[in-house]
Image (cartoon, rainbow, N blue to C red; front, side, top):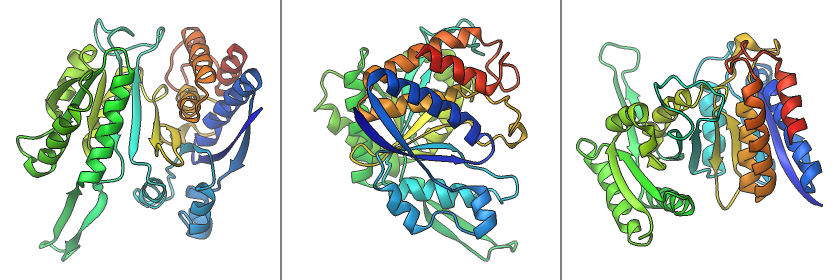
Length: 349
């Protein structure tokens, strides 16, 4: 029997509730497919920060480096100023563990309501590969005369050949492994000529190594338009950190909302972290109303990364079987509690 040491980082708000359902499903998959998960609790988030003033101590980062993977619930506390936890915990972990790929499947499942007219599961099934450690989120820049009417604020987008190349290579390899084998670079080459000039040059260079992949380019504004009008055009989209952050939320709402959307912060050679992307939703904390499907699908993505493909497929099939029985996927409209959803998916596995 295989064994994985997984850091369980439940975090804030509904994070502990929804990831507990994911744990339930993953443990059920382990029983069926012959592996065991050793869950290691990671105490980080708003409550720890309010109690100790700590975001991520170096000792915790060192412990994370020894894990097989990390399962994150949510970060965001109503009593902590926005930005402190996001930068001090999420970005710090991504940078320290070099999780340079943010992977976001945009997949509409049968039985899930889509806000786009005449679009169904056949039209919405693509993946966004977002560079995760550079760009505007690298933290380069500063302020002069802050707090005065003469304030100057500079936030620079950092794009290195190494960072761009490894992100694009991951996207090409992913596209080559999918049936359609189509890769779209999303950028803004007509205005951001330095940054996306680099992206486009490396994109063309790597394309010579992947002749089986059909290459395409779209400006970010056009990408947003086609994600709504013709999402079936896309197979794999690759883009930088900021544009990726924006278009993945647009993708999430087209696949049924934040209760379904899951993502991974990937280091292909190291420790990756998987999460539902909906946030901590503090107004639903402790009410049993939060949809845990995104957390369960984040666990499914983690199984793929760990190499447990058969188990991952079983979890996805179980999710597909349960979704049509839910009255609605939004929090408070599921027709069952958070725990009941988890129980049904675990039983279906």
